[in-house]
Amino acid sequence: MKNTAEAVVIGAGSFGSSLAYHLAKQGLEDVVLVDRFGIGEQTSPRAAGLTQQIRREDETTRLAKLSVEKFVDFTNETDIPLEYHQSGSVKMARNEAGVAQIAWEIRKGQELGLDIRPIDADELAERAPWARTEEVLAMWITPSDLFLEPRQVPQVYTAAARAKGATILTETPVTGLLREPGSGRITGVETSKGTISAPIVVDAAGAWTRQVADEEGIRIPVVPMRHQLFITEPMPGIRNEQPICRVIDANVYVRPCWGGLMLGGYETNPLPFEMRAAAPDFQIADMPLDLAVLRGLADLVRDQFPILQDAPLQTYRGGLPTMTADGKHIVGPVPGAEGFYTATGCIVGGLSISPGMGENLAQLILTGTSDIPLDIYSIARFAPDFDEAALVEACVDAYAHHYSEDYAALA
Image 1: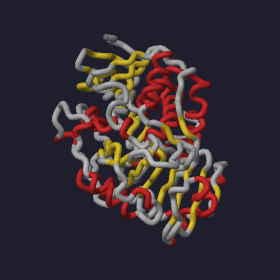
Image 2: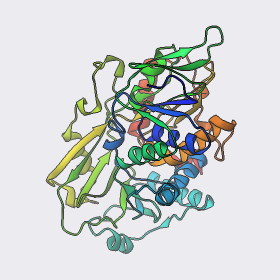
Image 3: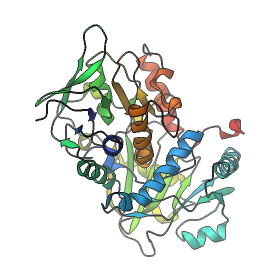
Image 4: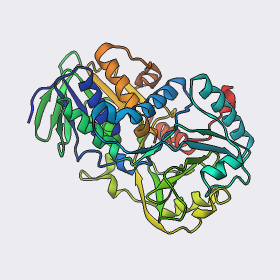
């Protein structure tokens, strides 16, 4: 068991594993990545594994665009295999608000150099013969969007970090933070197996983020929120070369998966999860699921994806991504706790943005600046004395309207 390091990253999910690799790649020789479970065993492997590069904020679009480029180049960069399917993605609007969003995203995406454009019904039928355009008023396609098996992301980034000299500690819960008396500076972590002193500590513990920080009275305003998806049995004609499809007002996505189709979405009455009330041995696999929610989402898009009605399932699963009150990540230094950083508020899309976020957060930690500014993700935008009930209410609203925000107001 190591007792010193240059940096400790807590949490070996997609955010933490990417950050550990990029810290090591950018020059730190003694990085420790620690997790209370195994590598990427909790929410990361239960994600959908799909990307969407156009986002509400320019910075997030640039990070998502960089992440796709890094997925594509990952094997060249590391000599570690990573399988992905760059089949593109399509977004569908069924009402006027959605039409305004489609127009805004095409314009903004093209301004930022993204290969996004309108698509018509004939092209969609050719690319995704299982999709229909009844009641669809407008669509775009981004051909460079991709999907992948989500469990790969923490696995390959952890392997890449180890190859750069990082130490990986699994089955090692962090039980507290070490704090310098008087200054408030964080100087390391206490684990179930001993103390690790380090001048840099990053809390990327996913659904456990708040518990890690709470030990020292540091409040991080995120709420874990159940997110579910199902995967059908294999169906004729489904291929990995077919695109991801999203329906804005239904908050539903569909993509090829294991020879069938995956459907997931954002329910209007989601389940926020109070981790502080969970049993000490709780794991994401213990979270209660509700298949009726997914069948209800499938019913919302029956005209666009009739193939999903009553489709037999291979599996359904759920994770606990962390939500924030304004739907943006929380990434960077924590005021009042020098040496302490966080990477949380994955907003369900954390896995797909983790390569770019890990690279830029590593730059920020090591140099004080980053190629893509991360200021908009600062925890300082929230008051440290936030009200718990108000936070939960805002996070539920952000989740329930994940696709269908008022983009027209941004025009």
